[in-house]
Image: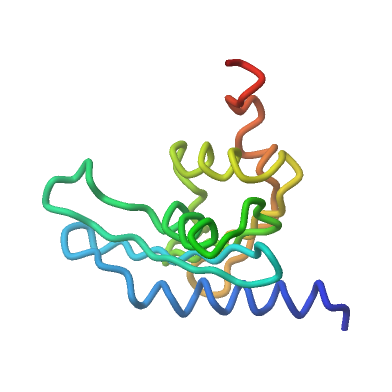
Length: 134
């Protein structure tokens, strides 16, 4: 088994595990995310707020944890939801990932009953806004 496969499994396990910690009292829609960055796995979950616009998505939470730990480049991401098919990241999360990774970023979506979709950031956000437009 390659090191990449082991890391992939660990990334997916971290996303599934942290999903249970999500704070989702309003929607009951729990999401966990894990990113590989700087040789480590960083994870986050969604944190809802009664003022809905203040809700923090799991993917942005994981990306922020990676940055707080000193990482500046995300190498892979796994997102776990309880849906079938698996739910992709929202636009705000995709844009955050685009800031810290390129279009080839591997994205694994994990859903209910073992559902799994492999894709890339470029497939999910083909024309990302970036510094080249500034």
